[in-house]
Structures are given as structure tokens and as C-alpha cells.
Image (cartoon, rainbow, N blue to C red; front, side, top):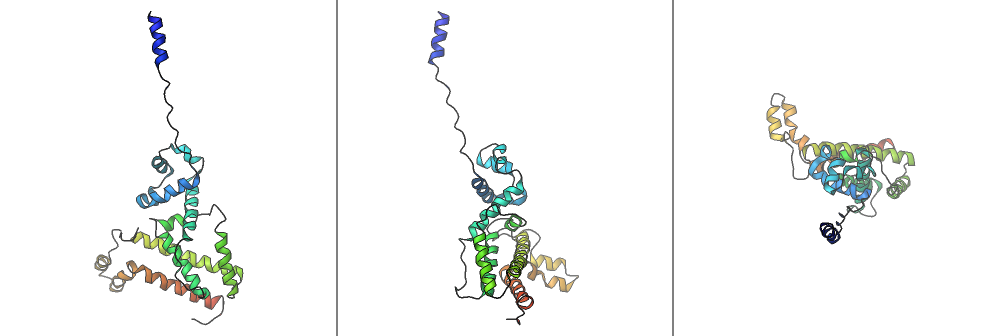
Length: 236
């Protein structure tokens, strides 16, 4: 009897339901999650393991797509470049090369400022697709029509790009996100600390405030330098 009842008990058991497997990940989903987490963690706190936890998967699942943090940053920078297409260009269609040139750098800065450490993420990265080539082609066509050689146009953008990246890295050290201010960068407190050096104390506000105006001021200096050194034109 015992063996019969044992067989009945075994037969009445339902097979265990298989645990649903997590949704299949792709590179874009992982990079989008990294960008979303960036404002919370900053670049230093962002890791593949932390992203895996956010996505509720094991870390090895991400290593199928990214073999290093730098590879992840390359993909995140590629997504940031893609986002720039949807940012507004505040310049007239018939504007000259200098206005379009300046506005393209302002758009880059706005894109970087959307994310904590956005400039650090973007710096030194390699695009993982060629889709940015369309924008480069338009830029180079505009600049060559304005009198630049194609090589001079490339160097001009690299100079201005490097200025923009460096400026935003310094800006985000003081203001990690719009409306935030890191400790130690209060102009009045700095002026007080530097009281023994009156000229140095006087520039505290110039260093740590009014970033929009200061960025445009530096951008004008870059453009006028290009106008004089590459095109041989007098200052505008």
C-alpha cells in the first residue's frame, strides 16, 4: 500500500514552473541604462556590475556586449551624439559659417550638460557607428564653401571641440548638473580665502559663475583666431 500511495503522490505533483528568463539585452539598452544612471552615480560610480543590477541580470550578461568600461562609454557617447540631432539649432538658415560653427558647439555643450560628467564620458571616446558621418559631411561642405580647405576645416573643428570639452569638464566640476553647485566653489567664500591676494580674490566670480557668457566669449576668440590664421581675414 505504501508504494501505491507513494506513486499516487508522485503522480499528483505538478512539474515546477520554469522561472521566466530575463529579456534579451542589446547594446543600446545597456548604454541607455548607463546614461540614465549617470546623473545618479557620476562617471566614477558607474560600472557594468551596477548597470547589471539595475537591469536585474548577472554581470557576465553584459560582458557579451562590452568587454570593458571604456567600450560602454564609447556606446554611451554614440547615443549622446544621436541625441544631438534632436536639439534645437538657434541660428538663421542663411547665417554664415561662423554662426553655424558657433551654434554647433553650443549644441554640443547643451548635450554634454544633460548628464553628470557628460563631458568626461564624451572625452576620448570612439563612435561605434558611422552615422555621425552625415553631420560631418554637411559641416565640411559648409566650411569648404566658406574658403577652408577640408583639412583646415577638420582642424578647426578639433580645436573648437577640444575647447568645448575642456570648458564643460571644468563647468561640471563646479555645477555637476544645472542648479547644483559643488562644495568649495562659492565665489564669496573663495574671495574671502584669497584676501591676501587681492587681484586673485577679485576674479572669483569670473571663475565660477556665468558659464553661458564665458563659453560664448571663448568661442568668439576661437572663431576670430580661425578667421585670422586660416582664412587670413581681418577680425569681424
